[in-house]
Image (cartoon, rainbow, N blue to C red; front, side, top):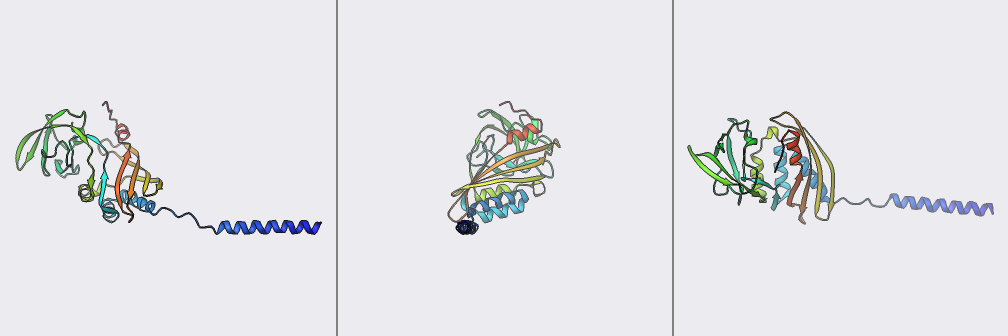
Length: 247
């Protein structure tokens, strides 16, 4: 009986060993390759302007679209790092309130009677209640012009070429955040969500600002990004620097 018991124990141990061996040799789950591309994308964007633009060139499909955050305003971009402290229009968003009103190269002289200068560019009345008319004065080809623009909702996606043109207006020296962290990336089929956090110092107030961002990527069968958009804590960022949003 003792020998039988020993044999049974030995058999159990052998089976357990074989089971453990088989478990250790089971293939590990294969990570969705789109997750790696999405992680590479957000890392490049945080690293610097050149890295970000190279990444878009390599990983975005030719027919890819960027869905930017919606806002109420005019619908143009400018370089806030202009050496002479001027507000000069860089791009005009198609189908925005200023499409057909502004042109690249136009310079804002005043908005609602407030003279534009380097210190107040972020505080002018471009954003606010939709439909409200804002009067401004611009300089075009050396001549001052009066314009009136009714604010509207800016919700126009842009293609790859427009995205690169928009990115090219950014300042390489202030592009990267003070600190950045990738928290999580998850995927379902051809869609990947990436959660990141960044820490910056506000240029005007000198106050620290941190924001969370969730970026959504959609990929085609070739592993290229065909749709890109994100949700970030824009309101929270403003409130950290003392702004109060009433509408």
